[in-house]
Length: 163
View 1 (cartoon, one colour):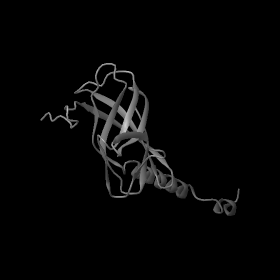
View 2 (spheres, helix red, strand yellow):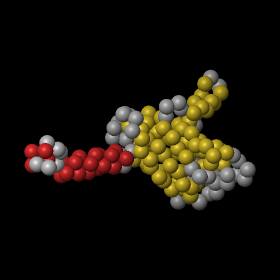
View 3 (tube, helix red, strand yellow):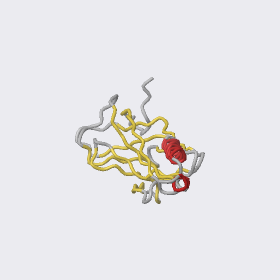
View 4 (tube, one colour):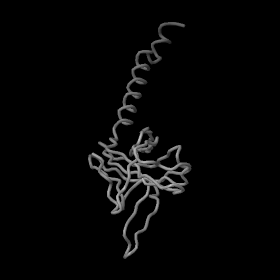
């Protein structure tokens, strides 16, 4: 090949630079959603579902689209709200919106992750693995792997303080 033919091709240096920059930007976004204070509600023996709660902060518009754990057959992002005198819970189609720079709280009686068809009881002071899947504004998905502590609830529904 002549030098003229080679000069029409992108240089290897440019290709490597583009790949590295793309990888770095994807990695930066993947770590962009902050997960704060995650915890799962302890269950009683034979209970088949449990809620998982946390605070999420994303520097860019994003969505929490899925959740999964090996302790459950199904994980869904849910909303619980009062409709008249009745508390209703349902999965969020399309996921939970995470507006840029705003803290979105997943808490009892509101947004939460529902783990269903549990294959084990969730015992106080244990931990469970949890995978969260986020989508950015372009629909690009990233996963975040967590180890979530299991905490007991008081009879009033508030988290028991164990300090």
